[in-house]
Figure 1 (spheres, rainbow, N blue to C red):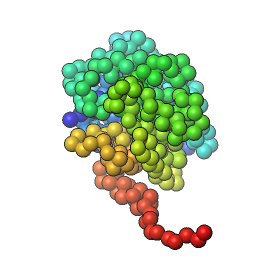
Figure 2 (tube, rainbow, N blue to C red):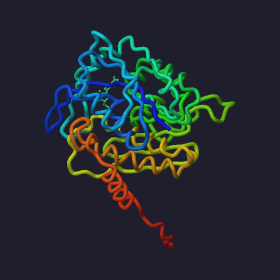
Figure 3 (tube, protein in one colour):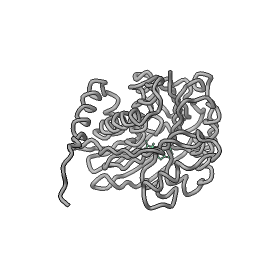
Figure 4 (cartoon, protein in one colour):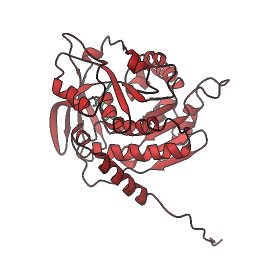
Length: 319
Ligand code: AMP
C-alpha cells in the first residue's frame, strides 16, 4: 500500500557548533518522506515556489517518493526556515520563518494520494491538517505532529485535529504544554481520553513523546514503553530528527498492513524510528539519510536491541 504525507517542503539555513549550511533541502514532509521510503511507497503533498530546484525534487525521486502532488506555485517562494543550535545541541533558536507559498495553501490531493491507507499530517496549521484528514476518511492509520506555535495560537483546532487521528507524535514539552499537565504520563493519558466518549474507536490510541537526545516514550491506553536514543559520539545537526523519527515509526506501521496495532508492533516501530533519527543527526539536513542503506538500518536495529535488553532474572530480595 502507500503513505501520504502533507507538510512543509523547505529550504533551511542551519548553524550548529559544527558548521553551517545555507538553503539546504529541508521541511518536515521531506525528512518524513525520506525516512518512510525505506518501508513503503510515499506520496508527498505540499507547495513549493519557483525557486525550488529540480535537484531537490530528484533527492525525493531517487528514494522512489511520488512527487506528483508537489504543487509548484508560479511566482511563489518556497517555505524558508533558519535556526541556530546551542553548544550541546539541546537548545534551538528559530531566527527566521518565511511561509512563502504556505500562505494561502489549500491542499489538493490527487486520487492516488487519497487512496493511501496510511496518512501523516506533518507539522502545519491544524485547520489544514483537518482538511487533509477529511480527504482520507478510510485511512487505516493516521498520525499527526504539531508544534508549540499551534498550541499557542490555534489550540482548539489542534485538539479537533488530534481527535480525528490514531496517533499523536509530539515532543514531551509540547505534550505538557498542550494539556497543562506537568507529568508526562498524565499528559499522554489526558490526550488518550480525547474523542467521542460514546465511540471507543474515536480519538488517538497511541501517543509518542519524543525526548530529543534522551529517546522517546510510547503510551497507549493499556501500556507504556520507552527507548533511549541510539548513543552517538558525534551529532552534527538535529534538524528534522523528529520528522525522520516519525517517518520510521509510521513507515514501519504502514509496512505491516496485516498486523493489528499491537504493543509488540508499536515497540518494533519505536526501534526503527529511533534508528532512522540517529542517522539523520549524523550530518546536515538530509545528507546522511539520502545515502543510507537498508543494511545499515538493520545493523543498527540489532545493536539497539542488544543494548536495551536485560534479563528479568528473579532475585529473592532482602526485607
Ligand atoms: P524538527 O527538527 O523535527 O523540528 O523539524 C525541522 C524541520 O521543520 C525543518 O526542516 C523546517 O523546514 C521545518 N519547520 C520549521 N518550522 C516550521 C513551521 N512553522 N511549519 C512547518 N515546518 C517547519
